[in-house]
Amino acid sequence: EAQVTQNPRYLITVTGKKLTVTCSQNMNHEYMSWYRQDPGLGLRQIYYSMNVEVTDKGDVPEGYKVSRKEKRNFPLILESPSPNQTSLYFCASSFIGTGGSGANVLTFGAGSRLTVL
Amino acid sequence: AQKVTQAQTEISVVEKEDVTLDCVYETRDTTYYLFWYKQPPSGELVFLIRRNSFDEQNEISGRYSWNFQKSTSSFNFTITASQVVDSAVYFCALSGHNTGNQFYFGTGTSLTVIP
Image 1 (cartoon, each protein chain N blue to C red):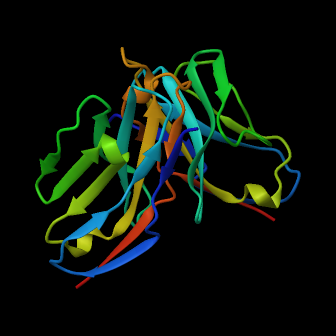
Image 2 (image 1 turned 90 degrees about the horizontal axis):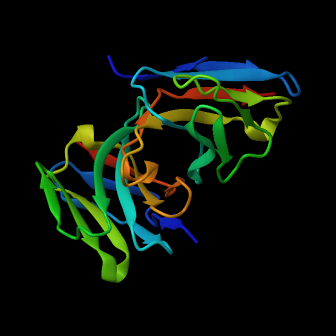
């Protein structure tokens, strides 16, 4: 089944304790991205990647890192989480067609709910 | 600037009523793409429709229809004869051809259909 898999789905952690949220897709998509969803703010893009070793900042990259060492994986790293990073996180992927990645439909993971105490 | 505005935060309707969800966008791009996604109470994000800026034809899919008007920068979504299963948060999104592969989402409209 074509899907984007995120882990963990739920996590409670404490300020300053490094954590990684993994994202893996099995559709051979070039484009992958991370979003956070907060009440009243909708989804905001954190980072995106056009292909292996190619990453770029979205609208809210502060406090996050990403890497794209393999095409299928795009982990989100919080080096020193803070309470303002408590949020629902979504990973998404798509092909990049002739219209650019923006033309394509994103396939989303199920979401990862992170609480930082 | 790229921006999507969904002014309706929450809407409640009685089952079988029609409801329209508004979406207004801003973009510098001449080529851009608009999307609607549905987020049911279970939390996943489900794609509903994509429209490119060159195609202003309205679209109907069952009880769903979309009205794209470039003149008013709007891409509104109408559900006809609403059902309880339509209860969800609906997001409108924008992506510009020349703006670096970023997607911009509105703040969402929470629709509750009352049986």
